[in-house]
Every structure is written in structure tokens, then in C-alpha cells.
Amino acid sequence: MLREFEGKVAVITGAAGGIGRGLAEKSVTEGMKVVLADVEEAALRKTEAELRARGGDVIAVLTDVSRPEQVQHLAEQTLKTFGAVHLLCNNAGVGAGGLVREHTLADWQWVLGVNLFGVIYGVHTFLPVMLKQGVECHIVNTASVEGLWSRLRSASYQVSKHGVVALSEVLKLELAFEETRVGVSVLCPGAVNTGIVDSGRNRPTHLQNPIESIPVATPEMEKRIAQVRQAFASGMNPLTVADQVFNAIREDRFYILTHPELNERIQQRIGRILTDGVPLPDFTLSTMPQDMRRLFGIQLQEDGEK
Picture 1 (cartoon, rainbow, N blue to C red):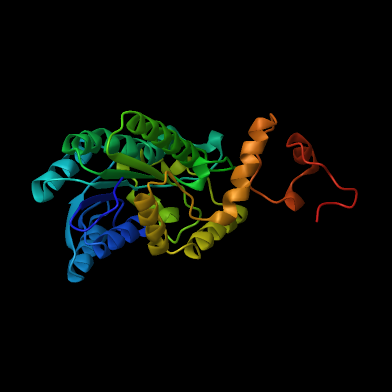
Picture 2: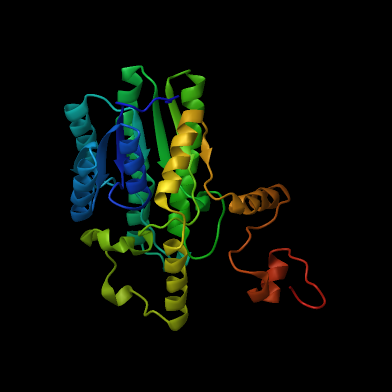
């Protein structure tokens, strides 16, 4: 729906780093007026100053997207400053690991509050404005490839991202059926060079777990965390993701899959659903116990897996 960006207004949550920062830089490059929203004030002000130094017409609004009154304030500041909104990127996100039984209610409330309800509040607040404007607009909701499959040890994150995918799909259908001028895309990236592994730094005090309830990190756990951190550090450049997002907006594409090498795994999930299988795990066959391989319906070779 939105093909021309020059002079238009973009609102980006989670804009102080990672994918959000990439989207903000791309928006400035495209000549847009940009509203930067983030919960991390120092990083937000730094981003605002740097983009202004590049000639960007930007403002920063400190925003916790898990709080609807702050999202409403974000909308009010956007309209007060620029008078409109044409591109909404519901991008803010956090992550938490652990088994389902290890998740506390605070873990669920924090992750779903930001990742899912942050998107819900963004759509609830900004969509009526876009519809009332009656001009070409677009909404991009950041999910993840983990909103398209399941794996071990990240239940709250995956539940939130599956929710974002479902919300985006329904919203796309509704707006297309009503023949509005508002487009929708859902961004499902793989590993991107962001700071999401350390997002706990911004976790609100009232949703912190008691120190005594936090399990002592084992060497195996520390090794896994280090591997995840390295995977993200060597992940795709956020600016590359932003380029793909803007191309998708221009082409009015819904699903934005940034890592084509992961498409086979998405197809495998669909295949498991259609054959009444169970979800595929996220570790290699060579390290999977034989009884678990039988559970997942994986054929064993006489000489072992290669």
C-alpha cells in the first residue's frame, strides 16, 4: 500500500538498537520523518542525536510498549509534532529462556507484555488514526522465525511471536476484505545482530524474579548462553533487514522471511502438522537420545546418524 516514503511519518518502537535502529536509519535515508520510541532512555537519546546529525527529522519518545497509556502518549506526541502517521513498526522485543516449568509468571508477564501486548497496543492505538487519514499506510509487526515453529527452552518468547504472527494474519485479512488503504506485513527474521540476549537489563523491577528463585547457572547453561550470544553477534546486519522490510512494503508483501536458509525448516513444520507428527526439536540427530528419536518418529540407521 505504501510505496512512496519521502516526507511521510514513521513510528518505530524498539528504535534505539538492533532491528529498530536499522529501520530508523533506513527511514531517514528514505526521507521520512521519524518518531523513535524505546524504553532505554540513554540509548534512545543517543540514537536521536546521531540521526539528527545526519539530517534526519526525528523526535524521541520514551515509551514502554507494555503500558497502553504510554503507547497512547506516543501517538499523541507523533500527531502533535508531525500531524500524521504513515508507517508503524511494532518492533520492540525482549527474550527469556528456560523450560516451561521453569518460567515464572513474571517471565510470562514481561515477555508477552512487551512482545505481544506491545504490538496489540500499537495496532489498537495507531490503526484508527491510519484509517481516519484515508491515505496509504503500512503496519509492520516484528515477530520471528520462532513464530513459525517450536523449539526447546524459549516458551514465552515463542508464544509471544506465534501470537504476533496470528494477529498480523488476521489484521491483514480484515483490512484487505474491507478494502482499506492500510497494508500489513509480519517480519520473521532469523538471527540478527541485536542485543536481545541481554534484554533483561530493561526488565522492570516489579517483574524481576526473586534472587533466590533464579537457578544457579551450570557450565552447560553458561555454554548455551554463550553460543546463543555468539549466534546473534554474528547474525544479519540490522540495516540489511531494514532494506528487506522496505522492499516488502513497496511490494505489499505480507511475510518477510529474511533468512531463506531457514525456509526448509518452516516447510518441515508444515509437513509434521499435515502428517500428524510432533514438533521437531532444535538439536541435531547425532546428539538426540534414541528414545527421543523414536518419539519424534525419526528413522534410525544401523550405523548411526551421520
